[in-house]
Length: 433
Image 1 (cartoon, rainbow, N blue to C red):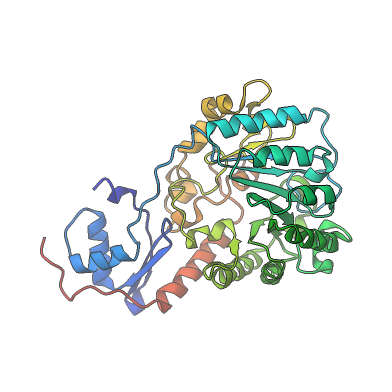
Image 2: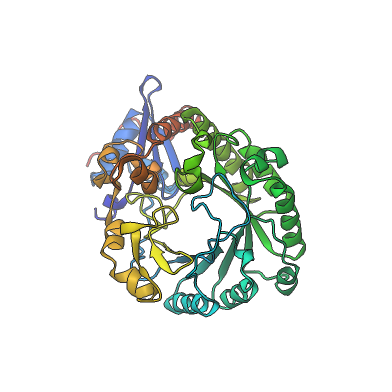
């Protein structure tokens, strides 16, 4: 019975068709059944006996899988370091309004010390970003140091600076991924957000990285100017041999605060998410390329994090360190109460393990968030973005601005699956208990 209590299911009913959908975000399993089948599933979850053949059939489809038990309060699985706040672009969607370097940014040796501490503790992967990390003269030295210690190293760049020495020296490195930011499918759409010439230069860098035998990825920010282009952006990424394309919704922080017109409407957000879900089925399920969007991750299946916790990895699995050494909640919650300490003073693990606020974030569940607790889609949405909620309401327990759009989107998707999935039906009568 204890195991059954860990199963997180979403139920969606179409009464007029006697169709009842059950969805498990841990396995991305969908089972559609009739009223009798629905009652048997509900009875099983309560520990009652029923139609064993039917339950075994549902089991085989992964409906009753449970999330992994992982204590990320000991060691973060992934370390993200902003190497600099300097950037040569002024993108409208930039969460930190990157421009110039801070006066007290981490030195080469301090970055190496941070990487060593994380690697020795058991952190598996690291992401190096900015600003623009290729503006640091020691970028090659830092990346090589990280590659010797982590199984997965990612460098996130705007793609406008091609360091030939960097690519020559790291040719064919298997555990390095170059992630390039794009916000459009062509120069006109991309450069309206990122600046003139940004698309062509980023395209050339993708070609250079591929020629060097390096894995590449493309990241984009879904907004009002590109919501109808995200499908073409996925196609562009695949044509450029990217192994992954990842999108996030634009957040009202940083430079985006000065451009409210780029915030997508409810319909624009739903449209973009739907296109990305279709591209997920086109590319990822066939093994061609990962297509990632946070609010679609439930359709992939995610056993790494229990669906009762907010879906963002930050504070739970990911540790985020700013260019001046602050360990913060995430890229968007980075000031005031969300600064947990500086690695120059305490060290990464000491801060990670002892912060009362981080421990609170790790234990916070969707059932403790008032507007989420009774929502039928809480195990899919997983409280959306708490940074957005904080910006919108002044509290981590508030409502994010995209709440109604997400409800409408999940309702639309589940309704489609409920009406078009071959039902799994029980025998005419349940077995006696």
